[in-house]
Image (tube, rainbow, N blue to C red; front, side):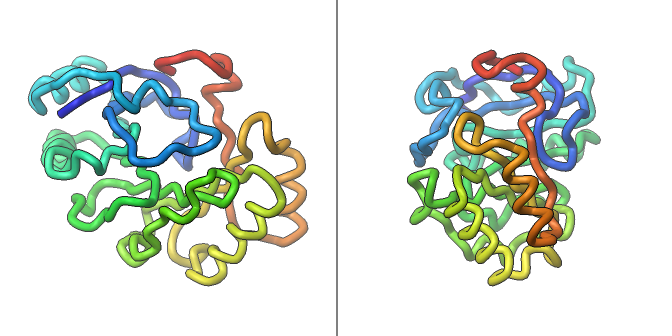
Length: 212
């Protein structure tokens, strides 16, 4: 597999926020979101055997692992094997995916964090909404909200696909584009059953710090 980086940090997002986590960031992405903060993962990286990746994760000694990117599902065959082997080894595995690649066939023990792209991302036409049918109650759907139009769009998708009753829904304000307080006010006003999702690692380590 082509791996951009492997590092340990505090999980900054999702319902697992605040927990120590080992991150395996894979190389390559088919999208170019307007707010992307990991552009280095588009090309940068080196080939690793799956056994070597697992050895590095074991050495880190943290039971929670997130596989992210880039877009992990661009290396789907290898990803499926890596995920199942990590799960068989006793790790809890999160997979963050950009919503454009089919998530079918991934080990059901893994948690899928499906990042549906809003219009403000510039990639809203790339969403594969058929993925929603694959989601389990333990999975999560994330929307990065850039402005009011994104919020209205996300609210429509949440209602259309009954996401609040299907799995956890996360709304994340795009840093530098939408104040968390304003998004919080919208959520409260509309009584949405969603979770405000802040990027804790950026508050802790800074906006541009890599490997956190």
